[in-house]
Image (cartoon, rainbow, N blue to C red; front, side, top):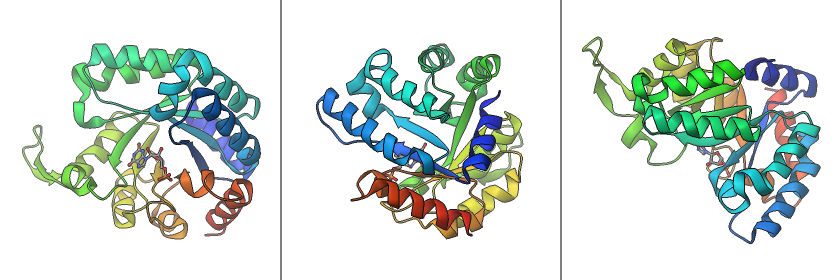
Length: 252
Ligand code: XMP
């Protein structure tokens, strides 16, 4: 089953479009592993996927502690996304993707800035051969995002002026990406990107809660999945918070 199909199936079955960003902050590996598994055990009924960042892979080790988390996610039938923002030359990108897929991840996040030839082409090739997913950054959620993603560029193919994120959204379509990341903190960008992608590429939207993005606004603008971290992981009752965010998103 492809990553894209798996995501849709789990989201439908669980009535949830919440992707948990499991990012415990600094600590000894054993402690981080305990916190992470505890949160996942509590929250899994209310989420449709798990997103991991390098901040957890670095201390735990991809083929060490991370395996325990990936195994737990598998037991709970949750697709897993590695937020590694792949951003190098093709030879290196391919190896990075191979390792994450070998470790058990269902999808990787990549940066379209590096382009296709000798850039992300090898990542898409590896992913397609293993029926895994590639999600592209289109417009990030943080305050500085306009400095890069909001720039006006001259498209080298058409020689026309366009916006960087519009060019990235078009690449997501052309490269048949399995998702596009657009920050919930920029709902007008979600709307614009959604008008380009329509239902061909689902929008994954981080930035809800801790970064100031709002669930209803992001979903109404066209976000298919919401990536939520601290609003859930740092809550007094993570399960109850995840349930309530899920319900708000479902009722839009
Ligand atoms: P919080 O705690 O802010 O966590 O809910 C958000 C999670 O999502 C990641 N993040 C992003 N990942 N593009 C991405 O690929 C983005 O624009 C973006 N903004 C936030 C962040 O690293 C954390 O894991």
